[in-house]
Length: 327
Image (tube, rainbow, N blue to C red; front, side):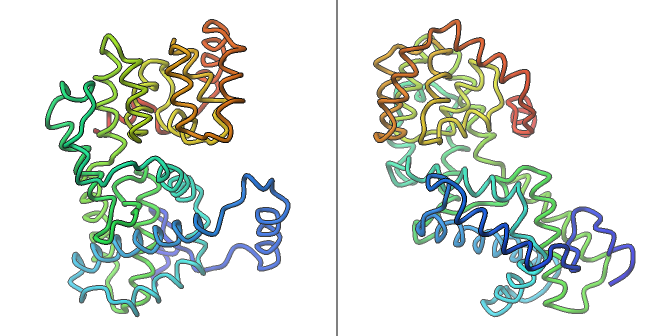
């Protein structure tokens, strides 16, 4: 590999292992033993995220193989690529971890098969631009594989995270395939990133719909309907617009089983108690009473001050403006 390619340009892999094995094991103990039980991943979550990573690597490697004119990716090659990525700390990318958590946390809200989504639209979505509805529906279908399992798609990653991961997979593909010229690999990465960008993300599609819903006279009813039926991405976009908060921050608050942050957002947005209670119980029956108590103890003015403070202090690349720019 040429020296200029060892520089890490474009987020490419460096196959020098930066972390010592002992440090890695200490990190694992901190995560799995000393962290609070509610912060630890369940076996089911581990299995789901592992399958998502495998699918993501397969998706990226398949596109790169096609652009490079290599044979289709087979299971043996995929195992080699995956092993190389693990050795190079690919799996410790924080952007990837954040995307995995949001995707996995959102699965518990899935209330209907993706293919059925557009056939049972709530009233608030029936007046939305048909092409925006179609774009969101297409993203839902693409995120489920042929067996119905959840997928994390390259198109749904932030652009900087996606570029790092595509370069990482490209470097692993190169080592697994041999005899891939520098220029050909760079072109393949450029073409792959452009293809994933054109595919469009579910977040961008959700923001387009959520912006329209937020302008509706009875957005509170629409918001409640969206959360209850599992359209958390669109619900997050609605609250993001109403409260001028970053979309990803709001989405994370909705997906948080604790419910406290969501209660504050709902109070600040002026939601009636009945609607707030229904949404909080949908998020988590186990914590809904405590979250509802927080809703009751607050008032709209105090909640709006809390939201304003978050708005000033949060630095989030997934802001509503950024999402609209991506769309």
